[in-house]
Figure 1 (spheres, rainbow, N blue to C red):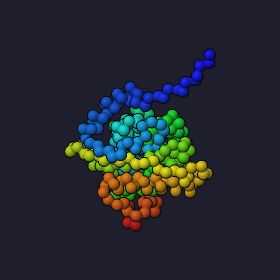
Figure 2 (cartoon, helix red, strand yellow):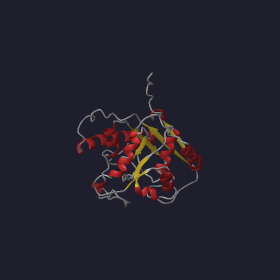
Figure 3 (cartoon, rainbow, N blue to C red):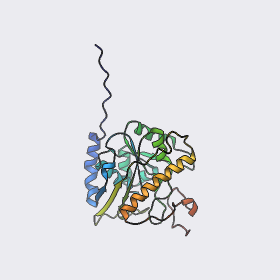
Figure 4 (cartoon, one colour):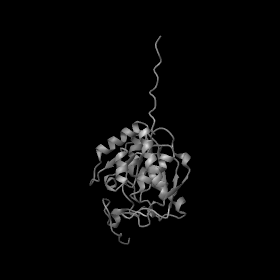
Length: 257
C-alpha cells in the first residue's frame, strides 16, 4: 500500500543557537532600555513577511531585532554594510547571519538581494529599512523611500508590514558614536496592518510602479510614527537630493529649503 507523502516539517526559527545568543544579548539590552509595544498581534507569527520600519539610529537593527524576537520571530536584516562596522552592533549582525548591502551609485546589489530572497522563500521574517539609510529629515521623520522592500514583497508574493519605533535616538543619536546608557531609556514601537498591495499586484514591475507602492508604505510608516510621537509629520516627503544631500555616508546640517 502506497504511503501518502508527508509535507516537509517546518524548520523552527528560534533554534538553540539563537536562544543562546538572545540569552547573552537581551539582558544587556534591557539594562539600558525598556520597551512598550503596541499592536504586536499584527506581526504574522509564521510564514514569510517583509517588515518595513523607520530608521534614524545605527542602533536600530539591535533594538528592532529585539522587538521582532519578543513578538515571536527571528530577526533577519537587509542592512547597509556600514552598520556592520559599528562596534558591538556589527559583531551581533555578523554572528546572526544578517545580510550586508554595499552602497553603490545606482544599480542593485544582486548578491544581497538573492540572499534576502532565499530567506523569504524559506518562509522567514525579513527586515528591510525602506529609507535605505538613516533618515536625512531634520526632525527624524521618515524620508523618501527606496524600492527594495516593496520589490521583495511583490516579486515573492509576501505581505509587507509597516512598523515604527521611537526613543532609540536617546541611546545613540543619529551618526553619533557616544552611547548614553543611563538613565534607562524607553523605546516605543507599533506594528501596523499589512500594506494593501492589491493596486500593484500582477502588473509589470516598473520604476513608476515601485515608486508609487513605496510611497504607500512610507505613508503607513509615517502614520504609525505620528501615533508614537503624538505629533503631525511635515507635509511632503523629505528628498535628500532636493536638499543637496548625499544618500551615502554621513551628512552635514542640511541647507534651508
